[in-house]
Image 1 (cartoon, rainbow, N blue to C red):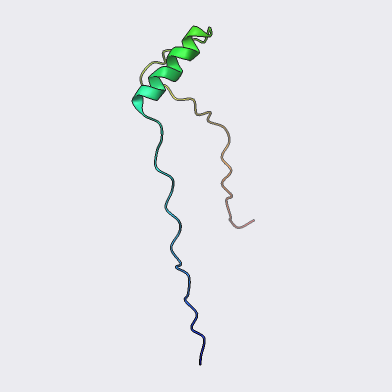
Image 2 (image 1 turned 180 degrees about the vertical axis):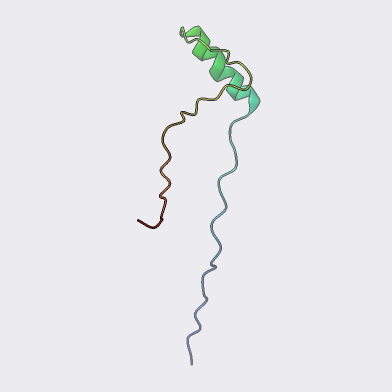
Length: 62
């Protein structure tokens, strides 16, 4: 009798569901503030991105 082999699925496993809720985040924020932490208010439109030289390579005739 021939042995049949079942091929495994090629699909990726599903990611774990999000476990953080707004209530647990509020609890963490409260604990952070009670421990002496400070939250900074950043103005709207301000970015933390630093602009420097580009890493793009330009190919041209010499």
